[in-house]
Length: 501
Image 1 (cartoon, rainbow, N blue to C red):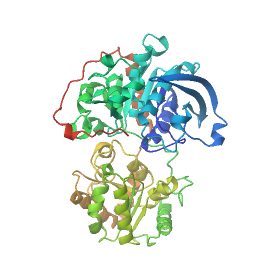
Image 2 (cartoon, rainbow, N blue to C red):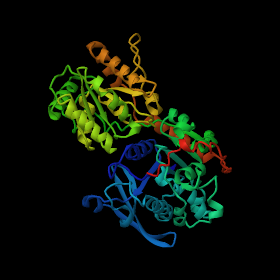
Image 3 (spheres, one colour):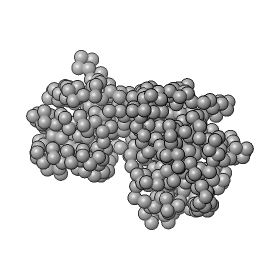
Image 4 (cartoon, rainbow, N blue to C red):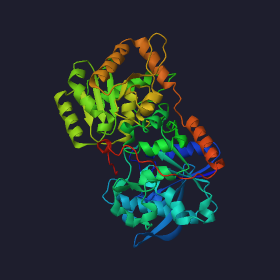
């Protein structure tokens, strides 16, 4: 099988979130299973040493409405994984992959350039085009809208993965001009139309042969109005084609035995090095250096989704305990300011680093005792998986991928790999933290729990095998008919979050 994996970001070239990790690790695991998987992404600003080894395959033009846009296709093999890059300096030479006022035009350009670029990939003709999140969603329906009857395109099947349904690529109707399509034919309920605007993600979901998301529980949740953010009816229409496959992590990138970015290497067999990481972390962050004080950590975006509001409400009571709290990340300004205030108020017990630092993040994973993820919703979550890899016990809210990967510790049977709570409430979160701290004081029990979490298998191999089976089913399936999406919940507009990026 030949798979073209389409993404707006991919490690190691640019990464804004978990998608960047997935777009590297999943194709890598799929190639190990014998498939020819290649990644295509925008060519952002890259170091000269990387640009020098890239090969230019073609220059060509696309059309965005009345505009002629010139693009080029580049190729690079990195760590055994082939990458294609769409180059257009006006749209992509920026410090971040997205978050700009013209993101609609930028990713219309990317989707069109990907499709046109298929002509210039030599002997690589994908059997399946696997698109990820709203930035790439339009490539799926535009394939048929622009190239129907072209033998190169007609045989390509499509898979669309939702990494976070909160971000849907919703824009006003005035974005239609960029597509150059017949409005009467394509601005309809079963295609682009989304209330009075358009939705990139909605059309991608409706048009794809199969739809996946990043955990089984999240696939169930997003079919409900509370979690579906306006697309739940569309997803219910596709429920027989909707699959939840939990993400994994790359055990070569995250490996405490040989990780050069942490203070001291350690393993499940030789766990003593974790204590050294803890003491070094406390010293680096200006906390009291004491191996007996438990460190609770968060490596996260500082947004409402991640449950920062719960932490804010619980902080004063939590600080009455002998604990240290370490948080790193960036996000909404009011949360950044609130956490800075807490750090100033509880000097020596709270350390907040408002930035994304890959090395510091790994040092926090390796040096902390507990990892807190009180998310409102969580499609999969990678933080809890990385934390367990480094022997740090997770405390999570039971939602999405957190529910699928963290099971409540049972002191009577010794089963379970962390601590969980159901309701999105400060009281429930504090109760779970208190329970975890009570076992931390029992060193033999705690050491066994640390051993358990380090023994978890969260590699990509299991997930890759599920994707491989899904791809096989896609290729064997007959072409499907697209029916009109039913109009449901029209009265519940107040539940919709119109999220464009």
